[in-house]
Amino acid sequence: MTGHFESRGEVAYVTSSEAAALLTDLQALEALLVYLDREWTVKEAAQHLGWTVLKTYRATRKLFDLGLLVVSQVVPRSGKPLKKYTTVEGCFFIPYHLTPVGALEQLLDLLERDARQHLFERTARVFESEAERRQQEVGLHLFRNSQGQASIIHSLWSEGQAPRGIVRTLLEPQATALWNEWASLRLDYDQAKELQERLAALVREYAAQQGSGRYLLRVGLVPLTDAGPS
Image (tube, rainbow, N blue to C red; front, side, top):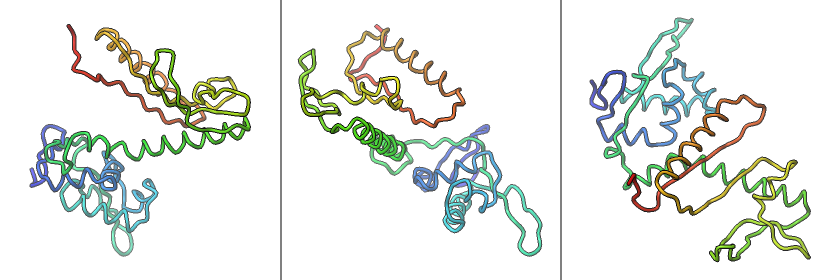
C-alpha cells in the first residue's frame, strides 16, 4: 500500500485525490496506458506515444513519483544504465468521487473529447470531398419530416434539385463508407434491450475484422426517461 493507491487483488485502487487528478489528465493517462502491463524505457515509450523524450520523461516522472509506475528492469550499459518502467499493477480503478471534475458527465466528456473531435473533423472532410466530387454544395437543410417534426440535417444541393441528405447519399455503392445519425426512438423496454444486444453484437463482429482500412466507430443508446423492465 502507498499513500496514493491500495493493491486489491491485481487492481491498483486509487485512494488519493492527487493520483485521481493526475490520471484524469489526458496526457498523464495516455502515458500510463502505454506502460500498462508493458516494460519500456522512456525513449521507447516516447516512440509509442509520438512524443519527445523530454515530454515523455516528465509524464513518466510524475507517474513514478506517485508510485503508479515502478522500475521493472535496469539494463547495464557503458555509462548510465537504462531503466525500464511498467505500471505497479496491470489494472487500475479510479473512484469517481476522488476526481476533480464537478459532475460525472464532465468526466465522460473529458475522456471522449479527442475521439469526438476526430470524428467530427473526418466527417467534415468526407462531406466536403463528396460535395466536390458531385459538384454540389453542402449545407444545412431545415425542414419538417414525415412525422411533422422540425429537422436539421446536412445535405447536398444543386440548382434545380431538392436538397438531399448527404449521409443517406453516402449509402450509394461507390461512395465513402460513413454513417452518422441521431434518432429519437419510442421503444418498449424489451425492444430497447434487443437493439442494445444487436448493436453490441455488430460492434464485436466488425471489431474482429482485420481489413486494410481504418475506421472510427461510435455507437450510443441511452434512455431519455427512467426506463426498466416492467
